[in-house]
Image (cartoon, rainbow, N blue to C red):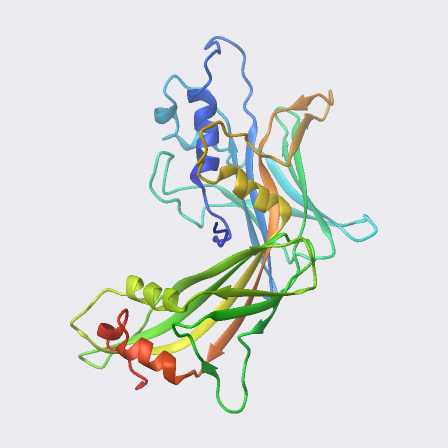
Length: 353
């Protein structure tokens, strides 16, 4: 199971919640009074960077004679700027430290699909999360007086101890057909971890121009544990996955005369409990029972009457820790595999820059 996602990703499960709410209801009256409810996707990120820009996706459910046609109209399922979005930060003593207001943005276009694109409305603010603090998301609709709330803790920084940096001699990276090991120290407020390697490389062309290519990602593996601050060792049975990922990620090009390694970044992502529960709830169904229970850790209510209201989605968090290996000296076994191996031998890799 993968949970290495971008800061904000419009997943099909969240998209279709609003669609199927109208498409799959067996008994409802088209003349009955209806009130839309919020569908929230909030995944806060903690990284080593000085500042983090956080993004939140918020939909509203809608009624339509044709759900698919309705999905093509942004105003049908997006609140746009008619809601108030904020995050409250509480310290260890549960005292409110500050309130961060989120503004709308259209800076990240939406991919093509059922719902209107490329414009999408996100809610964003700079928020550097503190792993010792608690964060409460509040989504208020002043036209209906409906408040939706959800709370999360943030996983802390992860210490990667293997592979490690070597100062002298130069860094050696050995990824061969033998077992490959990664070791890291688990962190607070996390229950699941994913480890990936991002391989950065460059291409040299016939005219001696150089292109620094997008990294190729090798999914090393996942782990689950509730224990914090322990050394966890994650092993793969073989390093072949690394070379397969490179082979699958590069297309042959006759204009390329050679390729060379720039760097490798090992990345560990830690998922908070509610994020992991959501992933489990939305993973493909493999059993005879095809019913799916919608998971949410949010609540909604009318601020005037205090009556409960409907809400879907979740608020949770993850942390991302990275170790970058630059100026690589490729170990002998890895040289053979990369330069001459069965997966990447045809791709013209070299140690000549």
